[in-house]
Length: 261
Image 1 (cartoon, rainbow, N blue to C red):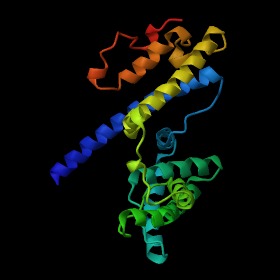
Image 2: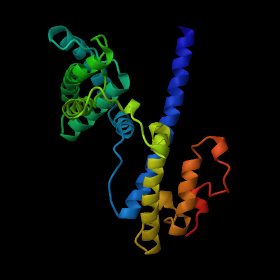
Image 3: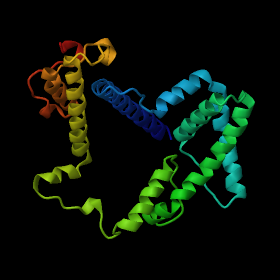
Image 4: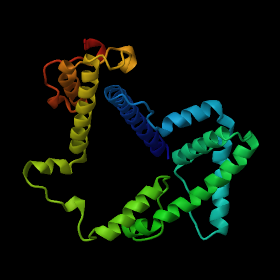
């Protein structure tokens, strides 16, 4: 038990560290993309919403999560949907979302807790049931269900695949010609795709900066990135996440502060 506990803690810390890197990278990309194309918006992150809700409405969020789990047990008992939702972080995210939504509509704390907990309990029973036909095909039984609140997208993908796909074919067995075979490794394909998107965003941001159209506060107050430095930035962003053997490249700026317009 002790060994399993420590392994879980270490695994969570590794997961949290990776999530932090992903959020930071996406934040930089959002800044470049917004500055380059003149768009205004926000990056929809469940973590950001949860943090805000826990800061402003901690009591409502926690009570909705706890009471909602009780409603989940009740609905699983009295309805045909015998599912217990055990993905805790998703219950936390949905509790935060329900809290912020209901409070924005002007409801009191008591109403928010009552309505939010009932909705959470219902969602915890219904969402696993929606994807269960496809989970059953994967696992071969009904002993496990999908505890995730993006289930509607998964179910839609499964339904579309059943109409247009061939169950005998699998992307795992797909034979790609020649050098395209490297894209079977998702790490390689994601790295290349992200690099391409960064190039597009950085080129657009650099062009607007040269033409005076970019924001001067791009990337936490630093000057907009000029086109001449786009290559160095994109290569640095890509190779700093690769093994050491692939990082033997000429030095590139370590921070955006070293890139001058």
